[in-house]
Length: 494
Image (cartoon, rainbow, N blue to C red; front, side):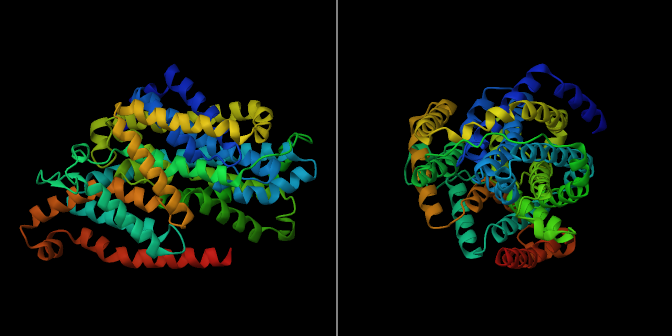
């Protein structure tokens, strides 16, 4: 694995890799800076571009969009109190107050430097942790893999919102959708309703764009956000003494964000809120938070960006996406012929390490591009949505069709788009459904192999030969309940 790491390091230093990462970073910041538009939307729409590139170029391109979009959401949050992403909600509490005091440039600089520090630190942690975790996962057999995937689905359902019943319903729907097509074990058609186009199952790309991008477009249209006033960059730049004063808070938030990133289903929003709350509780002057405290901006931005790296640990080692954005990344891996999971490091170890090293390099590019482009991004808050919406819809349909050149994919896109809009209006989170759809085939295959290994005596097999897998199965409902209870109490307090 160490030899593969050095081979991957050399692969990551390619010019085309760094060029596409830079384009991805710029595109992510661009979309994130647009009020109402999210990183998720950018990832879903631009996903098809990565399919025409090598994995070592296409995946870093998407990672650039991911990193840039999270920071880009802080621009409208600070300038007009309209978070570009959910992760920037905590940033807007103090960021907009600083703008009202004529210190918007200072707030944006702090958001940039905190984001880069949190992201870079968590990426180094990811690279260090990936070695022992990957080695451990390589020892997994089908029973352990099935137990881990089941636990992951339960954790995702338990942490997807205050209503676990809704999350479980959506997850079961996702699992059912994953069963449509041909049974991988028996070769029998299931739930195709006689339609030839469904024999190979539901394609992932139209589903992702449909449930993620189109509902976001609809919500922007419904809000009809027009007439925004330009909030010019004001005040002096951030001073080193101010960054040093907030450094302890940035480190604390980085640790919080890194820990949250490892757990599937939590994500940047939870990290930002917890980082902000921890900074306020530890402060000697908590009354200044929410009134223009630059430490609040640092706490939120360091925490939400520190999530980015550790989400790759469960994704790469187990094939478990940590949030909506990494679900799209998983789709990109699969489309590139890289199936995340225990075998990935054995078959494509150098490519995996190249992608991880590229994540660190992306942060250096992130710092330069962000520092130079902030003035331009700050003017994007005034662009009319009537100009942007048609472009987003055009890219959604074009990207879906180009992938397989199959008109049926457009119908699937529209169907899932309508479903996503209905689910969002009814306050059903689509993330558990997408996770169930993505993880369903792997879990089903592992379950079938486990049944075959047990020879029809599953209980005895687990009790005598697979104690570890049995322990995970017993712990699954307990952990799911405890996580949901903790999340519910945090939501109630917030």
